[in-house]
Structures are given as structure tokens and as C-alpha cells.
Amino acid sequence: MLNCRQATQLMSESQDRPLAAGEKLALKLHTLMCKGCRNFEQQLPVIRRIARRY
Amino acid sequence: MPQRHEMSRDGQHAARPELLSEELRRQMLRFARLQLKDAHLAEDAVQEALLGALKYADSFKGQAAYKNWVFAILRNKIADIIRKNQRLIAVSSLGSDEEQDPEALLFNRSGRWHREEMPVRWSSPEASFEDEQFWTIFEFCLDHLPANQGRVFMMREFINLESSEICRELELTVSNLNVLLYRARLRLRECLENKWQLQGDCSC
Image 1: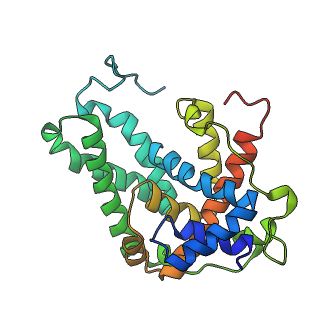
Image 2: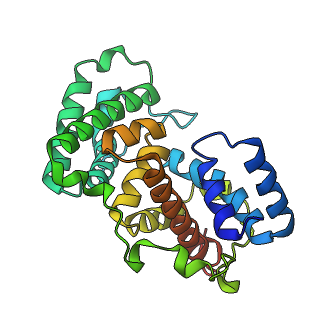
Image 3: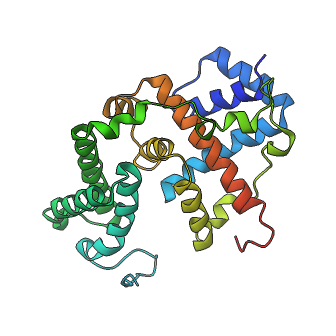
């Protein structure tokens, strides 16, 4: 089971490479239970859009 | 004060591309300084990129195409300078000091968020993109990233280089790059949340 640190690392990597099916499933299970990581996951694409709009 | 350019009805610059160079130059300088950490080298790189781009200015139909072209030239200039100056390739030395490791501050020993550091939901971020104060905050957060993290973040997200290109140009391993990008995103996210989302008196 992923902890928050591992989950956010994986979320960050998902911005740079496609995740494997097992990684996606592990993330899904973690974010179902963790509101903070769910918010983090939604904010990563926003940070990317901010940088692109810079 | 930068020169104001005439704007057309849809907000696009009506001026010819080469007339935009003062505004562009400022953006390019910020980027080059972030990448090179040397004002003189940055100035030289921007100057050369603008001169190179001006030769072909007539062949561009709009500002976006011209800007992309200029930044592509600047990117190559910066890459050349980085290759020539081995001291700048020290990006691969990640360092192990506390300053470089935001995870220790954000997560507890079992890898869970510290209660007060847990991300909150952001409200309508796109609505702030037209707000100058928002960009002041973003630049503040960007400037306060450790140099290596700011550099790779902007190469990845602003110039839109692929990870493999960044690794090749900065002689980084993929795992080192992943760590730098992860830490940059963690810090930027936290800074934006604290300075922008949680500031009750902030106009944005």
C-alpha cells in the first residue's frame, strides 16, 4: 500500500511518463482514501498550465 | 517602463514581430538567468537568440510562432553554454542538505502528510491567469526554488522539453531528474497554496 510520499512521487512521474497499470491501480486505491493526495493530483496539471501560460 | 504595444480587438499584438522584442527580451532574460545563474551569460544568450530570430522575422505570421521560434533558439544557446561550462553541469549533484529535501518538512516518518501541510482544494485557478498579482506570486515562488529544481522545472514545463532531452543536455539520470521535478512541484505547489490560495487579503 502506498503512503502519501510515494503516491505524490508517482503522481509527479505521471506528468513525465505513462504509468504502468499496477501503478495506476495503486494510486487509485490511495487517492480514494486520502483527500490531501486527491487535491495534490488535481493541482499538478494546474501547475503545468500555469508554467505554460507564463 | 516597457513600451506598450498596440493591441488588436482579440488581444493579440498588432505590431510586427520584431517590434515585440522588448517585451520578449524581458521574458527571455528571466528565463536565461534562471537557467544559467549568470547575468552576463544570460544577456549574451538572449542577445544572440534575438539577433538570430530577427533574420527570419518576416517569415512568421503571428506573435506565437515568432515567440516559439525565439525561445527555441534561446534554448539551444543555453544548452550550448551549459555544455561549454562544466561548472554549470553541477546540476547532477543533488546534495543531501535539508534545504534540498522538502519531503522531510511535508511528510511524517511513515510518509503521510503532516496535518498542517496537507493540500487543500484550490478554487478556480484559471480565473487568476489574467491577474498581474498572481504572476508576481508565481515568479516569487519560482525564484525561491533551489536553482537546480527551478531550472529543470522550467525546461520541462515552460520550454516543454521531454525528460530524455533534459537528461541528455544536463547529463542527469532519469531518476535524478524525477527527484528534481518532484521536489520542484512539491515546493511550487506549497508556495502557491500559501501565497495565493490561502491569502484572505490577496486580490487574486
